[in-house]
Image (cartoon, rainbow, N blue to C red; front, side, top):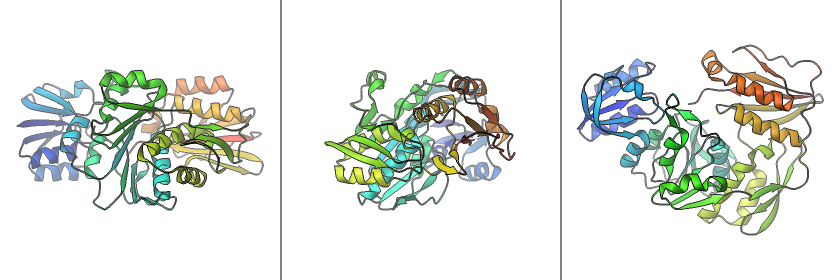
Length: 403
């Protein structure tokens, strides 16, 4: 079969190698013109024809990431097109218990909470997320390497006798997970130069062999794809008024009613939706309530995500996250508003580099901040952040690029 693989950045090399193993005639194209030469050379050495742009030829099969605009196809033609997620579903052979988590917001937090709870249950857990990949044990993620969270990377999981593979996936999934979870579809952002939507890509995570978990309010969106669903929501709710820098008491609806106290060194209020879906996954896996409650109380937060401290009378919240957007800032500020700490607050935004800075939705972010009455200072990449005088709440945000 004559196969054209678009985009070597987001796992195209992995798929090209799979088609080569199958004996296909593979053309792999670096349509974004950013793939290192050694990677392209390795693929060529394995037998693929490697090009920057698709040739004006006819192919039996086009394999394309859903977020890649059709304009990149150029003058190539094809009999059949499949998305990367569909190709992953055809090739994946990993029999270990796997949870795939996608969504617009909250993927990494959900994956971390789930990995922590399962680890506390005594399971041998492997965690692959936007922060890196490696075993999770004793409240810590031992990151051994960094890979994209694009669907094809599900084909590259390391060998090992892990009880559970917890995998964050950016746009889609294998459709073969034991449990598939979609955190949310907030805003249903456009992809592929707004020719498709996030829903178009994320629906491929829905599994035909296990449990699918989606938000209660989004059941109508996902039910049309004909996969059995269970919904999550309202399992974890605050008790009393939350206070910045203090532990958060919560009511937990999990195989009975319980109370738990979440740690004070991260903004636990911001994590409640992620706790909700993680607990729904745990319920589907039969995790005992005692294990869940104990693990919730010992969960340390995701490193760099909503870290809380008070220094010299100034409240600091530090958030380092590739998913920072007007939506995430809106949610963060809504949490801080409940704590009455926005009266004299400022946001310090560091976009890391010019490429990331250009991708910030500055106008929408500015509108959100204005609605809460919080000024925002956008620093230049690499510039030292200097806190304006007189501010008693400083929200330090670092917008990173995705792996």
